[in-house]
Length: 446
Image (tube, rainbow, N blue to C red; front, top):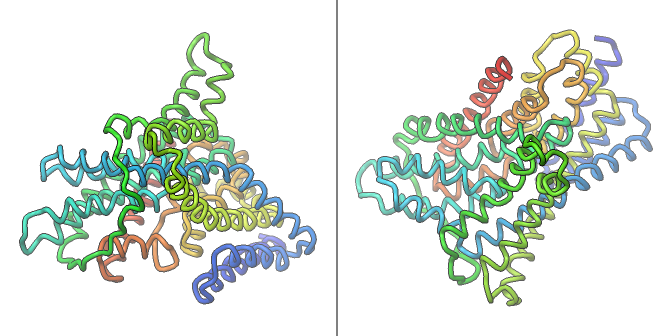
């Protein structure tokens, strides 16, 4: 490794360290910390300040231009499902139809279905109060807290695996676009890996980690509006519609007579799929109340407040990524990959793990990791779809105190900080490691 390469590595580590200090010690928003880290990387690496500024602008623009609409449409759909009671109806019905012995498995699969179109945080706020209510109805006894956790932890596993591995979630979708992966194949591979990973990190792991933990009473938020929930069939259709549209658009290209169809190509675009779902969901979920100001305000005001914070964070993550690319880190990693010094799948996972531990954000970890991986994929010939999944697995490694999701989970579970590490942080780590192992195994098949 030359002196220039060493300087670049030091610049990257220093910039990330500065961002971590500002976020964790300074208690600043990730937007400011990541932007400051991006400029630090450029200055230490010897990139002229004006070029660093241009790279920051390009990075933010590329990420928000390609993902901003997906984020906003996904959050608005999540708000509709929450306010209307559609997601609650699905979860409540599913848990009611299952025997107590199968409840952890039902909880996991319901979370996977509900989590497909929703951000992790939205799915968490929707689902955990329902699962907690079901757990509260369990028979009293010395092992009731353990039984509660064995019901709630699989739900968290289901939400987390689709968040990390299955488009059209923003992280995997960004990775698909950045690496030129096939969206349909990524969805199929992601689901095939996500389900067994959720089984391992959910019902199986909970049998070990839930033992002996005492829970306090969590604070559960009440619904914003009193709205009559839609029918079960309507709720399920709305949840699955964006995934069905994208999958139909991708799979239809392989059917004779449909290849090149403009309608199918449009349907496979996540922005189109989510916009159509939003337009369909509004009248089906709210009926005549659709035009009420209170309903519109609840959907859009809440959505925009959440979207703003998320967009700022991922935009700054895009800036850090672009400065790393401009400084030459992508080329350095490509040279290492061409020497076969490390598997590109493992390399993508390790970069995502490092950013995840530093920033606490799975989406920022994915953005940064895939931003420096295109050269590695081209040099190594690795499957871009599997690289997407390896990065996604790395992006959820060991949630800890700099991850807002850590505190959200702690509040909804009713665990102490130490027990949140034992349960939630362990669950995320198992998803990350098991996901990587399955991706590496899949690389020998596809």
